[in-house]
Image 1 (cartoon, rainbow, N blue to C red):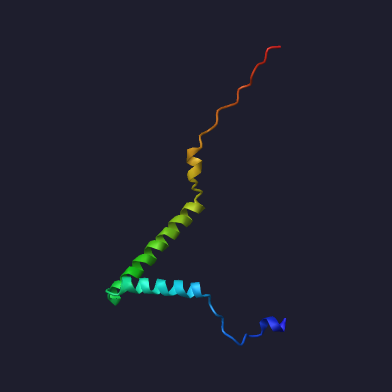
Image 2 (spheres, rainbow, N blue to C red; image 1 turned 90 degrees about the vertical axis):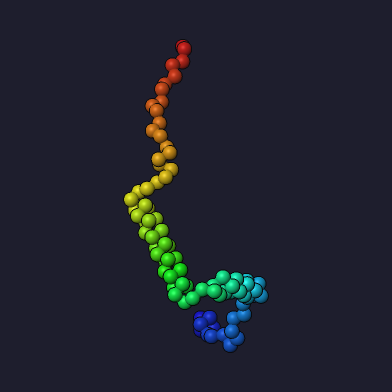
Length: 87
């Protein structure tokens, strides 16, 4: 058990494809945000947080109030009629 909790002497090495994907993502995002000021970035971040929180609250409200979109499409079934067979 102690060997599992012992710290490793060498740091974790991420796979090359992960590091490449991380670098590509960082380059793309820095290219998009290069021309924006700090105030614009804060406004965009605030708008993103506001929209995602409204979406989360809306989903929670719908789930706790029993909203089911499939239930609206289901109609009430008619009564089953018995078939009279000739004897």
